[in-house]
Structure formats: C-alpha cells, structure tokens
Amino acid sequence: MFITLEGPDGSGKSSQMNPLADFLRQSGYPVLVTREPGGTAISDQIRSTLMDLKNEGMNPRTEILLFLAARAQLIEQVIRPHLEQGGIVLCDRYADSTLAYQGYGGGTDLEVLRSLLDFATGGLKPDLTLLLDLDVREGLRRRQASVLQNSSPGEWNRLDANPFAYHQRVRQGYLELVRLEPERWVVIDANRPPELVQADLRAAVLRRLEAAHAA
Picture 1 (cartoon, rainbow, N blue to C red):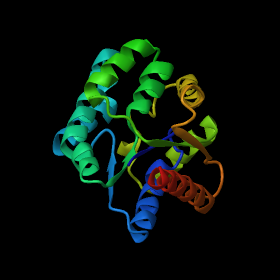
Picture 2 (spheres, one colour; picture 1 turned 45 degrees about the vertical axis):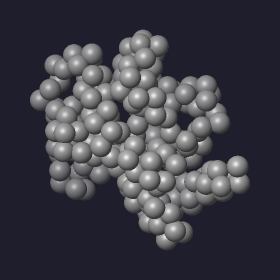
Picture 3 (cartoon, rainbow, N blue to C red; picture 1 turned 135 degrees about the vertical axis):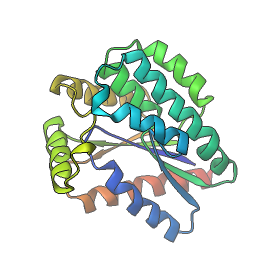
Picture 4 (cartoon, rainbow, N blue to C red; picture 1 turned 180 degrees about the horizontal axis):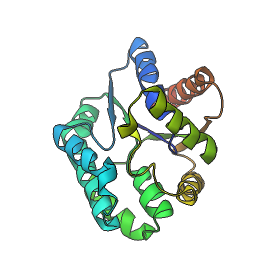
C-alpha cells in the first residue's frame, strides 16, 4: 500500500512520519519511509538546488521539472520496487504537492501539471493520502520557530520564503484536492497536540489497511 502525507508548511508531517512507521512495524507491516523531493542520491541533489535560497531567480517551469525529475527517480529506484514486494511505503509529500504548490499556489495550469505528473509518476497514485491541515499563520510560525530552535537558518528554504498569500492558496488548493477526490483523502486537524494528531493518523491508516485486507 502506498500512503502519502501532505500538508502546508509547518503542519508536522515530517515529525509524525517516523512514529507512524514505527507503529506499523510493531504491528507487523513491512514499512519503507521516504520523502520528496529526495530519497535517492540523485533526488537529494535536485532537492538541494530546489530549496536553496540563492536560487530565487528560478523559473517556475524549471522548478516544476526539477520536482518531477526527483520524483521519477524516487519512484523507479525506491517506491515501486518496495510496493512490488508487497510492502507499505510512507512518503512525505508526493504528486499532490505539485498541484498544491506549483498549481494552486503558483498559478500553473492544473491540466498541464496533471499531464506532466502522469508521465513522471508512470501513473502511480497513492492508495491513501493524509492531509495535515492547519491555519497558514500557525504553520509559518511553527516553521520559523523550528528553524530558530535548531539553529539552522539554512532550513528556511526558497518555498518557505514565498509571500503569505501564496501559502494561503496552497492550503486552499489542498482542500480543493480533497473535495475532488474524497475517497483517497483523510483530513487530520494538525492544530492539536502532536500525540492527538498521531493517534488520528494511526487510526486512519489501520482503517484503510483493514479495508484492503477485507476486500
């Protein structure tokens, strides 16, 4: 089963991923954890280029194509082989991020993006997508606090630095994607304490796994 975590910046996806994976492993499931962009040596190099604040002049089409290149490499090298072996893949971001950020956020035509995504992914779609949803101001506040606490200003990346209105469009884009495909998505309220968010994530994944086994 292919499970993706999506959400605006600061929603807590990355910190929730490993506890969720550990829970599933303890329940006997073979789980692989990965992220986008990244997850392979090639994809990590692309990630560095995409996120570097020095690349503020990057053309929007360049940005999209780099995300797609990193994704294509990750799918063929990591995700698809694990799925073919019957395992579970948990991925921090996937194709829906492109629609939310470069589509709804950046204004690129959604149908063009969907065509490009179909090519880059080879048609591979998640079985379940978990959206960690929260207020945009709170998400950006969390991101800034995390950077300061870790004393790593470099973690504040090129996409984080976009205007507030951009981040608002991204969140609304995610909610529109949920509306268009409700059977694939589960929305989790990320404005609550992390342990409550984690409990909801576990429950949502277990429901989908049980339904898959019963089918």
